[in-house]
Image 1 (cartoon, rainbow, N blue to C red):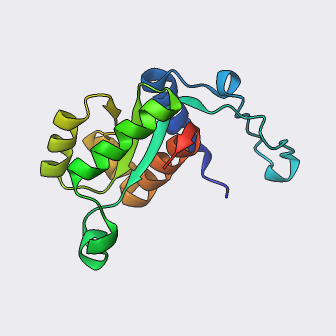
Image 2 (image 1 turned 90 degrees about the vertical axis):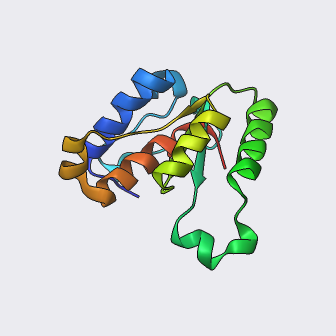
Length: 143
């Protein structure tokens, strides 16, 4: 999948600033012309963080039996952090503010891309979702 360059740049800046993650260090080099991407399987390290997509909102109502509680999700995330010997987790989520505040309390090692009002207006929900996906895709481990 090819994402807009301006959104990738925002994601890369965030990775560098908050997750100590760069394409060079993580071996996740990218070429603008995707047809020139010749990556050998297993060569990318990924950033020193766990990437998690934590679905909430409407998904919870439609899939109650498949979606863990926030406490259950935190327990699983902690287990994965320990298993992969990682200290930070990037969480992409559509959780409501109340759930995000609870997550911050339960999981202080959590990092999120929290856009400014200007970024929200500029990128809209779709652009923010791309930024989250880009950051998650560069993690050394995903769940």
